[in-house]
Image (cartoon, rainbow, N blue to C red; front, side):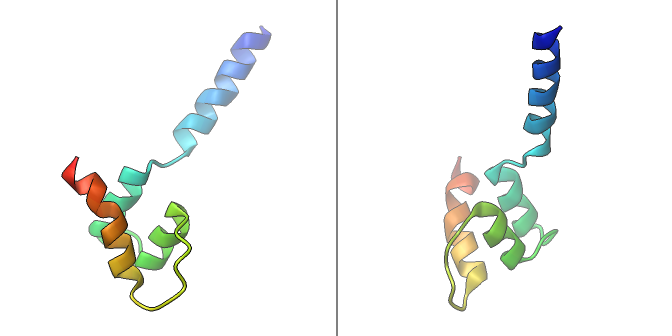
Length: 64
């Protein structure tokens, strides 16, 4: 019973997390802003041109 409970919790956590590829796709489709994408991806850039930084970071996911 205990294993089933932990498996259930693990599945909830797993489905609640968004992959970096999904975040990049949402950013490219303008479903989220570049600032939101930067925050979700954990990028530490603090200057102007946030969209360029996100695009460069996400370029890896577009190629694969």
